[in-house]
Length: 183
Image (cartoon, rainbow, N blue to C red; front, side, top):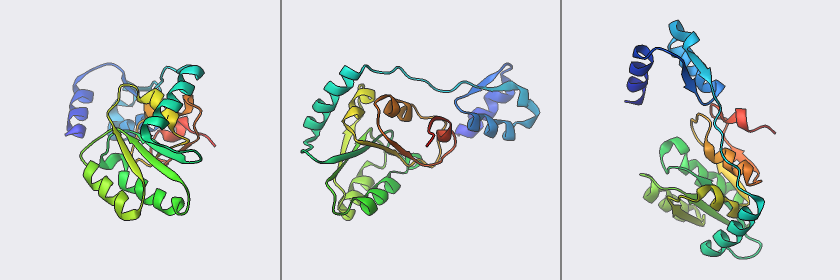
């Protein structure tokens, strides 16, 4: 449905169509090569919270999650849907987390919530689903590591917000993520 709607808009609306990453722009050009001059890129951006706001939020979030001293919080922000690869998230944490004090937090919700919760229990991964939040860009300051193993992305705001919070970002090489994340 998404592709059909996109095709209809691009073929019927004249002017420049904007993509959020050069990768997304390239995908559009490959699908609509006869209209390649109608595409441009404007990268996503986000407001950077102040350092003091992030420090206050870190303590508050970790307290609400019940995180004890010396626990590493690995988290993400997004819909709990196949695109975000939540089962891959659990699988990766299970592999690296064994024998370590790790708490996983997912800020968001979605159709795979029950399946992901069951997978976490089966793998022995401690996972809290924090649900939809208006303050996610600040709340992720409670993380120690931001992890986004998406299957496909344009250029996700959550990655930019994690970088603003000073977090190391671990992400898949999906689409436009490499335009924001450099080693």
